[in-house]
Amino acid sequence: MIENIFTLCIILLGSAVLFGMIRLWMGPTLFDRMLAFDLVASTGLGMVCLLSARWHTALYIELLLVMTLLGFIGTVAMAFFASNAPENDLHGEGGVTQ
Image 1: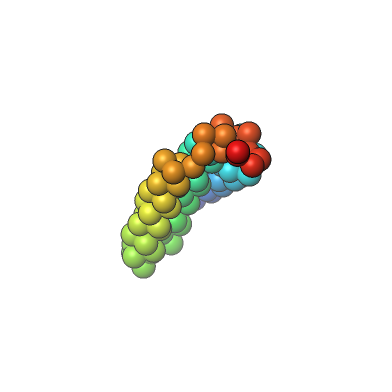
Image 2: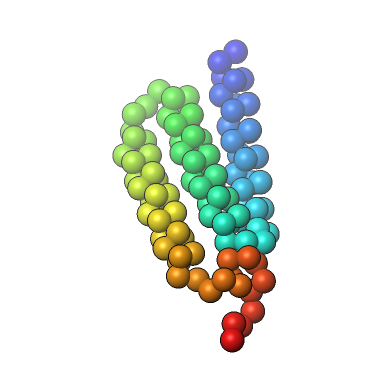
Protein backbone atom coordinates (compact mmCIF):
# COMPACT_ATOMS: atom_id res chain seq x y z
CA MET A 1 0.00 0.00 0.00
CA ILE A 2 2.76 2.46 0.90
CA GLU A 3 4.48 1.78 -2.43
CA ASN A 4 1.32 2.88 -4.24
CA ILE A 5 1.24 6.09 -2.24
CA PHE A 6 4.91 6.79 -3.10
CA THR A 7 4.15 6.17 -6.77
CA LEU A 8 1.11 8.45 -6.68
CA CYS A 9 3.13 11.22 -5.01
CA ILE A 10 5.93 10.91 -7.57
CA ILE A 11 3.39 11.12 -10.41
CA LEU A 12 1.73 14.19 -8.88
CA LEU A 13 5.05 15.92 -8.28
CA GLY A 14 6.15 15.03 -11.81
CA SER A 15 3.01 16.63 -13.21
CA ALA A 16 3.69 19.74 -11.08
CA VAL A 17 7.20 19.91 -12.59
CA LEU A 18 5.69 19.56 -16.06
CA PHE A 19 3.21 22.39 -15.45
CA GLY A 20 5.98 24.51 -13.95
CA MET A 21 8.17 23.97 -17.01
CA ILE A 22 5.27 24.98 -19.25
CA ARG A 23 4.79 28.16 -17.21
CA LEU A 24 8.54 28.75 -17.28
CA TRP A 25 8.51 28.51 -21.06
CA MET A 26 5.28 30.43 -21.71
CA GLY A 27 5.07 32.83 -18.76
CA PRO A 28 4.29 36.27 -20.11
CA THR A 29 6.23 38.14 -17.43
CA LEU A 30 9.52 37.70 -15.68
CA PHE A 31 7.76 37.27 -12.36
CA ASP A 32 5.75 34.33 -13.73
CA ARG A 33 8.99 32.73 -14.78
CA MET A 34 10.54 33.33 -11.36
CA LEU A 35 7.61 31.66 -9.62
CA ALA A 36 7.72 28.77 -12.08
CA PHE A 37 11.43 28.29 -11.39
CA ASP A 38 10.73 28.17 -7.66
CA LEU A 39 7.96 25.64 -8.28
CA VAL A 40 10.24 23.39 -10.34
CA ALA A 41 13.05 23.63 -7.78
CA SER A 42 10.75 22.88 -4.84
CA THR A 43 8.99 19.97 -6.49
CA GLY A 44 12.33 18.57 -7.60
CA LEU A 45 13.41 18.63 -3.96
CA GLY A 46 10.22 16.87 -2.98
CA MET A 47 10.78 14.18 -5.59
CA VAL A 48 14.31 13.51 -4.37
CA CYS A 49 13.04 13.34 -0.77
CA LEU A 50 10.36 10.82 -1.75
CA LEU A 51 12.80 8.69 -3.71
CA SER A 52 15.24 8.74 -0.80
CA ALA A 53 12.50 7.57 1.57
CA ARG A 54 11.29 4.95 -0.89
CA TRP A 55 14.77 3.49 -1.34
CA HIS A 56 15.48 3.66 2.45
CA THR A 57 18.73 5.56 2.01
CA ALA A 58 20.19 8.81 3.30
CA LEU A 59 22.67 9.17 0.44
CA TYR A 60 20.66 11.91 -1.21
CA ILE A 61 20.74 14.35 1.71
CA GLU A 62 23.81 16.10 0.27
CA LEU A 63 22.06 16.32 -3.09
CA LEU A 64 19.07 17.95 -1.41
CA LEU A 65 21.32 20.53 0.23
CA VAL A 66 23.00 21.37 -3.08
CA MET A 67 19.66 21.56 -4.91
CA THR A 68 18.27 23.86 -2.21
CA LEU A 69 21.29 26.13 -2.45
CA LEU A 70 21.13 26.26 -6.26
CA GLY A 71 17.41 27.03 -6.19
CA PHE A 72 17.94 29.85 -3.71
CA ILE A 73 20.87 31.32 -5.65
CA GLY A 74 18.86 31.11 -8.87
CA THR A 75 15.95 32.95 -7.30
CA VAL A 76 18.22 35.65 -5.90
CA ALA A 77 19.93 36.04 -9.29
CA MET A 78 16.58 36.41 -11.06
CA ALA A 79 15.40 38.94 -8.47
CA PHE A 80 18.61 40.92 -8.97
CA PHE A 81 18.06 40.80 -12.74
CA ALA A 82 14.45 41.92 -12.29
CA SER A 83 15.51 44.89 -10.21
CA ASN A 84 17.89 46.01 -12.99
CA ALA A 85 15.71 45.10 -15.99
CA PRO A 86 13.94 47.75 -18.07
CA GLU A 87 10.24 48.15 -17.29
CA ASN A 88 9.12 46.67 -20.64
CA ASP A 89 10.95 43.38 -20.00
CA LEU A 90 9.18 42.89 -16.67
CA HIS A 91 5.72 43.00 -18.22
CA GLY A 92 6.45 40.60 -21.06
CA GLU A 93 6.40 43.13 -23.88
CA GLY A 94 10.03 42.45 -24.73
CA GLY A 95 11.56 44.13 -27.69
CA VAL A 96 14.10 46.90 -27.79
CA THR A 97 13.64 49.78 -25.39
CA GLN A 98 14.50 53.26 -26.53
